Image (cartoon, rainbow, N blue to C red; front, top):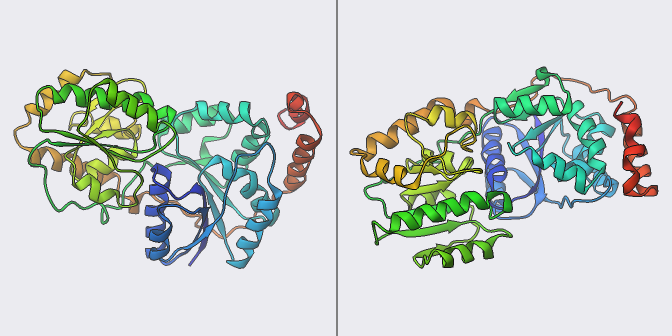
Length: 393
């Protein structure tokens, strides 16, 4: 039995949070002790019910290393005899990385996103990350990415040997995502996820598609599951397209029941995977264009890019509507997609644990962390290139 510490920003609705919930469930089923460190949120009670030790802890974005928080994490690692740490999000690096390095605890670094501008944003906004990203990824026991393309780009960006990576496509606990009823008619459309700026083009596409579909069928309703900073922008779009048959459902940890009450899910990434797992029609709204319905003709290629649609051609709303209307057997269509993820994307076959017993020697790495901290404490941010040049040669 292992004692595993999993850190992430918060426990509200989102792709990373859902992944951690499913991951934790399987780890506990396998007999491992799981400690979750994150800001308390929607998934808090459900994770505790699974048997995980859930500790409320905030990971604020700061301009320097957070040694105060790091000391707390050190105590948690010692108290629960943690043997490995799984780090899911970049704000957690500021405090979790120093703790792991100081105590010689191996950690697994997750790259959940396929949007690479995120690294530039962190570096430009919080320059200390230019140091920390290099140290963090170079010294991770393994780096987990969700696609082969993400692995390739990440390896090139940080100049890390491909042997350090493992690719684990986003997966489901299909024992949880089980649907009791089948789609008989297309009446309820569901958009779910974070209402964040990077998702807004896809959400706009989804709203436009619904507005187009509604012209041919009045008895339809649009549901939104989630929340975020772009909530008001979505309301404005709904007003612009004169959509009144909608409902804002907010955050929930019971995603399954809401998918089951819908007929079509429109979104990207994990939302599409979950829709297929619930035998619902899944439409990829896309990050850079509308990609349309997931079918037997594109599910394999779509899954290889985490159902983001980034490797699919754009399609029109009308083409998607025509395809839907020409499906004669809903059950057969949806079962084909389900069987694909049952074979390829069952989380029980897509988890990573450090199998060997190891003692990590981080040499003088903790001293480097302290030097970085002192430099950013005493120098102006505008001089950061000079400060960190010795570490980037």
